[in-house]
Length: 91
Image (cartoon, rainbow, N blue to C red; front, side, top):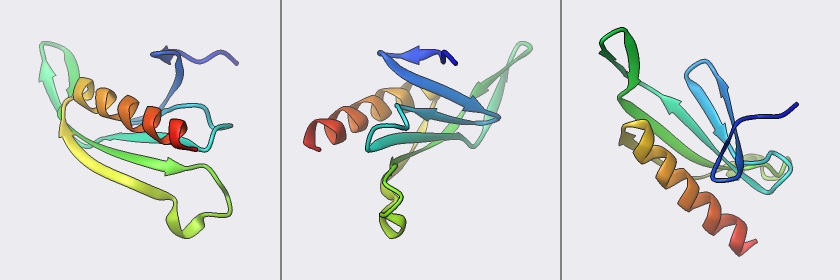
């Protein structure tokens, strides 16, 4: 299955949760839309939670490596890309 991408990495949505990155790599970012605002007839993301996650099944106690909360999906995606880029570069 072909997923939409952001900056060359898969972006998968399930309800108000997005996963950014390739699950076959060591890290992915989970993005949770916590609040929404109405703009005409559209729901726009308000408060967004971001978590850098390890995909290593043996790291169950340290699955969440970083977390933050930001306003707006664009800001969250920018941070998600930076976190993922650094984490994958350091592996």
